[in-house]
Amino acid sequence: MPQTPAVLVLADGTVFRGISIGALGETVGEVVFNTSITGYQEILTDPSYTKQIVTLTYPHIGNVGVNVEDVESEHVYASGLIIRDLPLLDSSWRSEKSLSEYLAENNVVAIADIDTRKLTRILREKGAQAGCIIAGEVDDVRALELARSFPGLAGMDLAKVVSRKDVGTFELGEWKLGAGYVTPGDAKFNVVAFDYGVKHNILRMLVERGCKVTILPAQATAEEALALNPDGVFLSNGPGDPEPCDYAIKAISSIVDKGVPVFGICLGHQLLALASGAKTVKMKFGHHGANHPVQDLDDKRVFITSQNHGFAVDPDSLPANLKSTHVSLFDGSLQGIARTDKPAFSFQGHPEASPGPNEMSYLFDRFINLMEQQKQ
Ligand SMILES: NC(=O)CC[C@H](N)C(=O)O
Image (cartoon, rainbow, N blue to C red; front, side, top):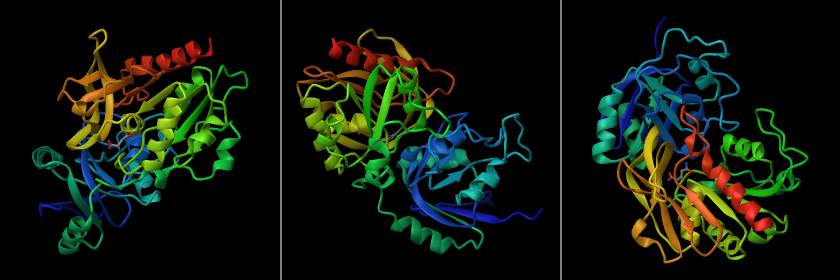
């Protein structure tokens, strides 16, 4: 079968030639590498990858095809996919279509047959940088121009872009997840979740622990959230830079002040830090993978975690009432915080992801315990 050519051009001028394995056309974004061996569908559908083109360091991607269950949202959010090798045949009893068909249907431009090790070395050495993939009518000059025109994620507020907008739909409480989960009628805790780009498994894990979850759009106010009389407030993951999300920082700061239990994940963690007076910084190439060791500073236990972030909380900026609870054993960066004066805490990685290990799920139990204590 004739193969359609594709090209990836980085903003630094490096050109990679390969073949198209998705939609025809062009796409631009920040190129990041993810070291996970499994989970390509969960990665593609994670809203936090908005405006990012993902390269997977594991060389064989697509072996088990695609199904309707292994998704973290209802759309593909990654701006593009870069892989080494797509198998000729996929095989799994759960597979419904090939990765290539799925990418084309979802209009995702993707490239295979390139040296992803070389690409990853460039990203590690120079830091994440913009790139452009063109599939079909390959044009290197245009690809370089497009890559260089990408403004970068620093300063970009994408939480309000990907968030659900319609308050009415979520105000009413019960929301059916894509996979068919329904909030139980006899829920023990009333949780309000701010949707900055929430992943489905977070909602499932709250529901499984007896929470009724009401989802509010990113720009909902503290008053709107508190009017629902929540036992706890959850701050979701999400794309882009946390710093420009002033609406969220304002809402979170008043909710925390009221003493309502708060739990944040990833972008939600960064927003809790900003709302408490700390600062965030852009990392060189971020953390994207499923095997990052993180230490709980309380009892010194080490956990294998899933990670996906390009910004981080600056540990030197923590005010007196914010303590660090977790640290990355890869680079020493801050991975968790807790308020010392209020029942609020957060985690930088993804305790909801279960790429094999699911040992971080104790943080969901910690949130449940906080709500239980507050009720008594
Ligand atoms: N997964 C996330 O929530 C990512 C948070 C933020 N967009 C970052 O890249 O750091």
